[in-house]
Amino acid sequence: MVIELFNVIAPVFICAAIGFIWKHQGRPFDIKLISSLSVYIGTPCLAFYTLTSTNLDPDHFDEMALATVVTMVIFISLYGVILKMTGLSQRAFLPALTFANVGNMGLPLSLLAFGEQGLALAVTYYAVNVVIMFSFGIAVAAGAATWRELFKIPVIYAIGAAVVFLYTGVKPPIWIANTTRILGDLTIPLMLITLGVSLAGLGVKSLPRSTALSVLRLLSGFAVGWATAEFFGMEGAARGVLILQCTMPVAVFNYLFALQYGNQPEEVAGTVVISSVMSFLTLPLLLWYVM
Image 1 (cartoon, one colour):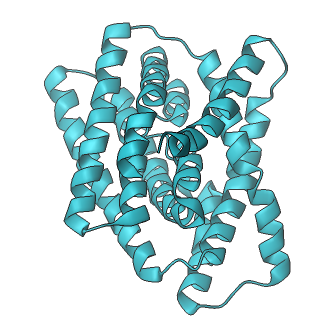
Image 2: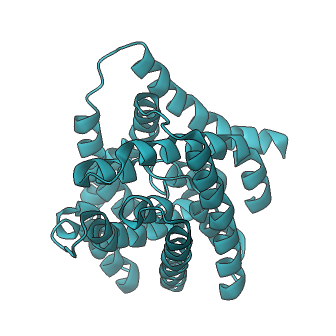
């Protein structure tokens, strides 16, 4: 079991470490360009190819999508109450706590731990998370409801197209499958290296607060994931992926939202860094449990 855990964790650590060291050596890295390639090309192709090539049962897709919605509702309700009780900014910390790093970390870990089937289920979780993040998440951060940003995210259209093939049982043309596979293969290493670069560029302003919020994110994430998996009676890869995705650290995207809308970006950056470090330290135990 130790070897299996190492085989899952090592590639994630190494890829993220490459980005971290690269940044600290002062080497050029156009994070905006790389992120754009990942968001607008790599991730949509990865999502489309994965969902159309793994023979994922539509019922399993529906179950994971519904379970994801349930976890999101619980997270929003739970963190909303806690932030109100503690007097912390809802606009700064509600998106940060709610939307975990289910892309840069969750997708690679699900693939390495559960194979192509796990990746397909993780992509389902990621898709629902993206829809809620770019609608409700931006509305909270901006202080006003907006749907405009949601319709700019190509992965939504890619998953919509994949779902058509998934439910009809029709396979996409070979040239489309091959193209999306090649472009999708860019995504996971780019995500992990970019994560390392991003973490190297962020700092921690308030260590006690960032630590407390990070502990809350990881512990409550695991509890919500476990409880939801129990409620739906999930087993195997579906159960493992749901718990894994729910227990991911604060996503870097939340720092960008906070920076764009002036919602205590330094404080949010601290939760990104601390929760990511904690997540790396606790990954062996988490993977041991879900695997």
